[in-house]
Structure formats: structure tokens, C-alpha cells
Image 1: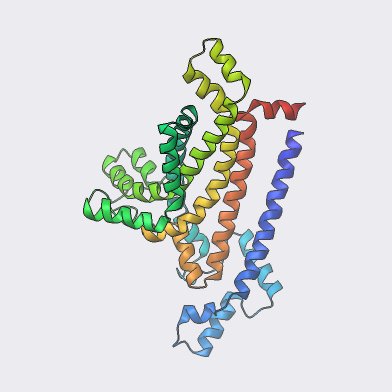
Image 2: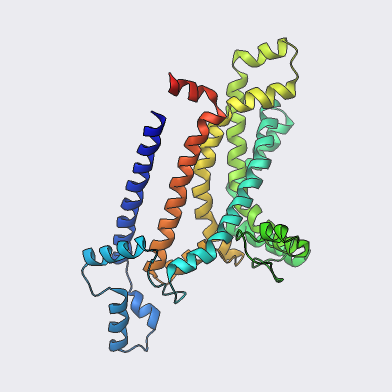
Amino acid sequence: MRGFAVLSRLGQMLVVLVGVSILVFLLTRVLPGDPVAAALGDRATPEQMAQLRSELGLDQPLPAQYVHFVTGLLSGNMGLSLVERRDVTSVILERLPATLELIFAALTIAVVAGVPLGVLAAVYRDRIADQASRIVALIGVSFPQFWVGIMMQFVFGLALALVPITGRSSVDMPAAFTGFLTVDSLIALDFTAFRNALSHLICPALVLAAGPLATIMRMVRASMIDEFDKPYPEYARALGMHPFLINFKYVLRNASTPTLTIIGFLIPIMIGSSFVVEKVFAWPGLARFGADAIIANDFNGVIGITLVICLFVVVLNFVVELLYPIVDPRIRLGAEK
């Protein structure tokens, strides 16, 4: 039954990807503006515009354009980017590691800081620690990310001169192995490059992690309070079990399923937020290319980025579903019954 469920889920993922490709393809064709005119400029001749339109296949009917797009997609060709003037696939492969590194760093900060703060708020409910956590959560979800990013650039980059304010690195980096500059520099034992990459990463990662950190903290607090209201924590205390063991081994684990679910929803939100963060910090990632493609009406770039993000989200949700039985054995036992 489990194998059938996995195959069924994979089939659903394929249907979602096909549906998204059709929807995004049609939306890019009905958006106002002429991408050919935007790419060539006002001084382009009608012959030049007609030639580029023919090269892009825009002179064909919509069904033929979609078939051509799908055929190229299956062969790894997403078409020509009007922003970068090269194949969209190569642009995505070049920029995707930067965005993934930023999102992974932000998610790590959000989980590592948000879970202990949520536990602390639940254990000391309605006390000073809980009140302070609510203020932190309110600040994290209230201030717009572009404003927080600009303030961090001004304070830590310009006023204190502690970290760089733009870019991904300012020194020569070792040969790419994973695409993550921090990881590649550690693999090469180049600690100068590691410190430089980390100094560029810390500010955008903190800005991107602010909202998810507050959400995770609030979710952990609410879930653990629900678990504390059940009989087993009091029974464990009566047996003389250490409070740390009760809180982290039993209560937190039973409260982790809602938290895992919210993390699965937060990552797509972080991908959307990275469009703003990458623009503010001039981070050379996929989201920044996506923002430029939307502004320039680069339909091939928009479609390619949307499909990559959709694939990432669908695969991530699939992984989260696989983690449920591992985190909470009750789900696995229920499925077996």
C-alpha cells in the first residue's frame, strides 16, 4: 500500500507540473507588452522584429508554440532568455545554487532559533519569556523585508562596516563542487573564502529568516501548549522524569508534526520573499533573474523559473509527507492498521 501511495503521489506531482506549465504559458502570452520590441528597443526595424519573432516561434499559433515549448523542455531547452541573451536552462543552472544556499541558510536560522524560542515560550507560558517571544514574533512578521534589508545594510554595512552590503563574494572562490560558496570553500579548506562568503550571506539570510522564525516559534509554542494540557506530561513529572527530557524528547516530538507542516508551507513563501531580498542585496540568484525577467517581459525566463520553483515546491511537499511517519510513529502505525 505504501508503494502504491508513493506512485500515486508521483502521478499527482506530474499532473500539477503539466497544469502549471499550461497556465503559465498562457499567462505569458496574454500579458500586455511586446517582448520582441522590449528586447530589440525602439530603433529596431520591422525586419529585425520579424526575424526575432520567428526565432522565438511567436509567429505560430498558440498550440504549436506550446508543443514546441514542451518538446524543448523535455530535451532540456527552455528557450532563449531576452534578459540574459542566452539559454534559460544555462541561466537557471548557474543561478539556482545561490538561491538554494540563501534559502537553506535562512531556513536553518529560522529552525535553530525558532524551535528553542517556541519551547521556551511554551514552558514559561504567560511569563516574561513568553511575552518577549510574542514581541519578537510580532516584529518578525510586521516589518517589510525590503525595509529590514535596507536598515541592515545601513547599520551593519555602512555605519559599522562589519559586513558587505551587496553581492555574494568579493574574493576568488575555489572551484565549484556543490555551488554553495560556503560549502565549497570548506571542502577546499579555504577559510578566507569561507569567511568572505559567510559575511556576504549572513545579512540576506537573516532578513529572509525573520518571518519564518516568528511563524515557527508561534507554531511550536501553540503545539506544545496543546501537548502540555494532555495527561502524559504530568504523569512523567510524577514519575520523577527530568523536565528537559519531558519537554524535548516527548512533548516537542509529539508537537513536531504541525511544525513540520508549517515548515513545508514556509519554504515556498521564502522562495517568493527571496525575490525582494535578492534585489535589495544584489544577490546573483534565481529570484533576482526572475524579477528582471518579469520586468522585461521575458516570457521564456518567467516560464522556466516558475516551473523550477513549482518542481521544487512539489518535491519538497513530497519529502515532508515522507517525514511524517518518521517524526510521529503514530502516523506510521495508523497507516499500517
